[in-house]
Amino acid sequence: DIQLTQSPSTLSASVGDKVTITCRASQSVGTWLAWYQQKPGKAPNLLISKASTLESGVTSRFSGSGSGTEFTLTISSLQPHDFATYYCQQYNSGRTFGQGTKVEI
Amino acid sequence: QVQLQESGPGLVKPSGPLSLTCAVSGVSLGSDNWWSWVRQSPGQGLEWIGEIYHRGDTRYNPSLNNRAALFIDKSKNQFSLKLTAVTAADTAVYYCARISKSSQFDYWGQGTLVTVSS
Image (cartoon, rainbow over all chains, first blue to last red; front, side):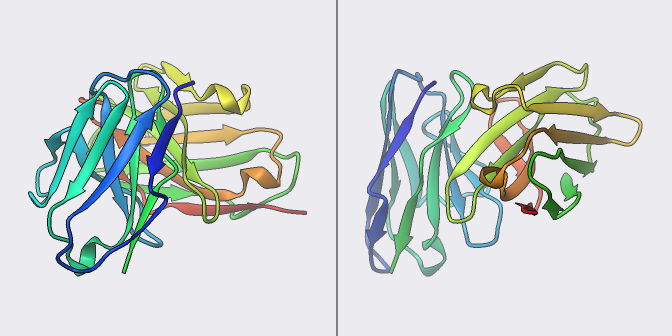
């Protein structure tokens, strides 16, 4: 079982801030990692696939990087609608999610 | 436009089976995609349950100890989940989702809350 650990669990930030979320895997997942945004009461929304590929329609303020066991999601300039919970998810072996990072004001 | 909609009982008794259906519109279940169930316990993170291909091939999360089974009905363009021997720990919002050809969850249903309680 591949475990994913996100840090921090909660991130307090302001509009305009640059924020970075880290996702560490218990073993290598190559670049088979995705990032999702979830708002309260809603299903997750796919932001990034294959570690760094931005999905169609997703703003370029989001970017992803990393490979192997360490990955990051960066939001370059936080906007009010970016306050949400973010999850990483590996699909190298089965599918597992990180525990989430809540980005709050 | 691809849309998914979960349906099923919102309350299930302990030890009983939990059964949910996902109706898909805008795309055929016979397309080259896997179809999946993901759940989220109240205030918690996301857990992949399993997935099914249109030929009936399935993959499951081992942590569920063989309690989950997925079925597909291409004539109705829907797929379903059956989870046996449920406990309070199975209380969650259950989502159905499509897995894209590049293997991510790209379309999701709105989710349905299932509570396990007597």
